[in-house]
Length: 265
Length: 65
Image (cartoon, rainbow over all chains, first blue to last red; front, top):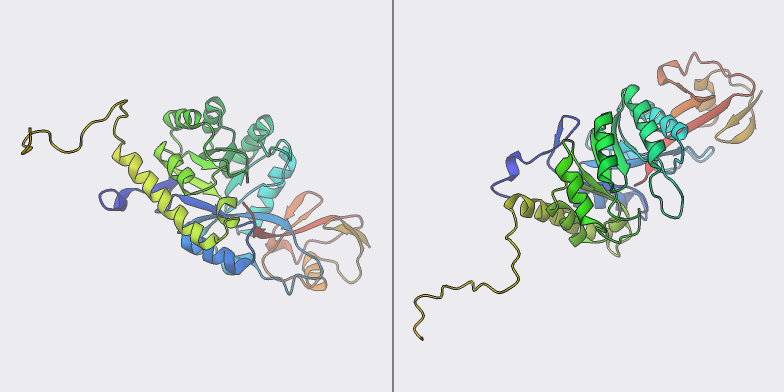
């Protein structure tokens, strides 16, 4: 990055980040691979899940927070697996206690297991409750521009439409809606879910998204650490292409070399 | 005393506070505790008494997307 890089920060809840790639920490072989992938991705914000401690095995278990120290990364606890308002809110409160008052969270309230699509009415209710309780909410939603606006109006600090179902790797299925959501928004818009490979991430950024959050595309690549590096470059390339402004499309050719001054006629 | 810890019915002896419970269960690392749906702040682990029938959740951060 040259012309744009020094000032081109992603600002979330008033805090600047140089990386626009956010990654999840699930589905890796082990915590060492997680750490290496996060490092290769350049991500500064990483999502974590809140789950029950294994009673009786706690002493021997490696701890995610030792591999991804909260003073080095912004940890983004998620409410994955929550299908109702109450469990999502409880999960966030536990996360805030666990992370010493850290109040930035990723809210997702899911509709069913087959699609993992968000249950929008419940997500709206949970977002309202959490914001009233002092949380800074980054919300997983569908690619509906009207809903994205509602979440912004409610006070969510970022709106994160899916590009395709979670873990599907199907890519950006509705670029027109994503673009409309971006055009309408005053808060950061991040594509959350659906990216399968580097070009998908670049397309999201070229559409004007402020960032991309992904997990499976990296964790389930044959070589996750290499894919993390590819995603980092794709996000940067897509961002620069967006800022640079693409050339207009045309139906027919336009010669790149001057037509004047040829030695043949 | 009968309590439910992380969904499991458990007979608890020799633990009156959350601190006692964590020591008894030999839980390491960073955790958060909820009892009967309410967060118990870490600062109160020493003074929050456990009661018969408590539903106790002890959670940690793990990898997730």
